Image (cartoon, rainbow, N blue to C red):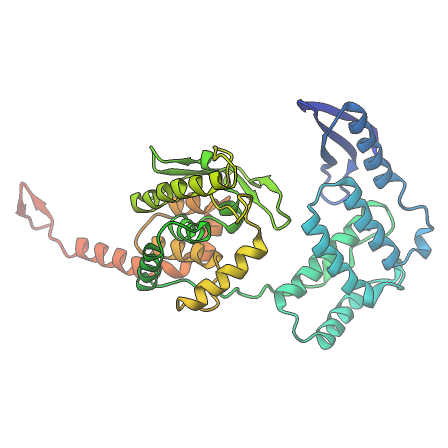
Length: 391
């Protein structure tokens, strides 16, 4: 497969370039395929990145397709994605483990010899050897295998994707714990009793009040907290590696209204934090994280999760995850009659169908009230000028 043209380099800002390389039509969808990357540096750095991308696409497979094994191609698949840079390091790490499992069964098998029956047999062996694997994990393996074969088709190494004729394993229905209204009231009281002297307590309070994701809370800065309007602007997220990233979707970048009680606690915490930071020789600013660690920097996932597990265990919520406070807010809002569009916007879901699929269980109670409302309308007699009339 060859990359078309020389590619393009567009200046995006100071010392920032966007590199784009087109490499033909997708044989299945007919759409043009492009790889893009953002380069921070000078134009020479951008040219080097463009050449790396071209080499990754064009120069990685010089073997006879008839002698190419699955293991050889899957390694190329992973290295190409790494070189092109269009996936995160976290995704690459997850894919590496999935590909390792697939290679255990398919590494020495020729690509051309793998058909639907082979794929099905591999799934049977994986389940027999690894009974702890969930349906969701088997689904992930299927999607990755299908993706690898699709790339092999793009290179004209195989004529068809054997996974197309194999049903994808079903995704397990996730178990989502959400707190009851009384449990929320109790947790809120516990937070109030502990005051506003610890950043991690404020992370729990924000999660309970807004339904924000953990990364969004840990990536929140004071510049995104509007005390005058009682709002929080979600613009970025802190990932597990400790790096900030912009929200993935347009829906993810959002404005969330926050109740007066939570805003008052945040105001108190901001004052306490400023005094603590000054003792460390750090001046608080709009760029200061709301949830700081002990030395005034970004609070990492590992340290926060260690604290979170102990905090919830000590206070009568064993095993509770921060993300389950997100589910709690959504469930309570839907059950109390909030429209799905409002809940969707607060959560940052890209479409309302996702919100409905996750929280439809909270709708029946309101649906019964809606039915009763319609019934009460049907029971009324027609009137004219305030008097009941016969039809």
